[in-house]
Length: 178
Image 1 (cartoon, rainbow, N blue to C red):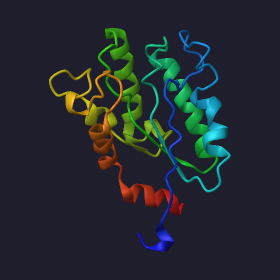
Image 2: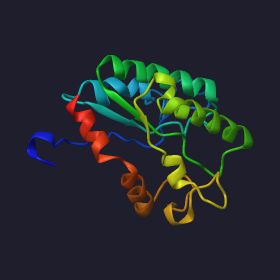
Image 3: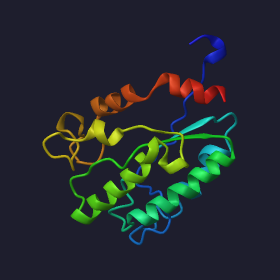
């Protein structure tokens, strides 16, 4: 991009965290590392943030959160980000083979919320379909084997590249111009 349109990307990803602080199965090592608790430190306190790629929910389901709790946490975080003038791009919860049937029902319910009108029902600015990129075409509740680290939860380098390939540079650049 020309110098006047260049921007930086900061990755504040951290493993084992949840979007909702109220998931009943959250243990002490990750308590306080939920999305709302990290928001000030990882996003709002940084200078010049114009957009956030929100990739949460994968750990919420096995930690005992249902779709309603996850969606409530999303709405609160998205409200705070948008109030700060920060665009929010979110991905539906990605597949995981260890999910129970109820986890998958909740995952799909959150996916429906996220995809509603392609704007989380007016609470976010856009959708990044990471779930579709990582989904195994044979076993849709699992990560596609060429993208799996082997643990069924995390994308390997090829999977990370496939995710990066669908992130729209024009979308990010437009976010940076706000």
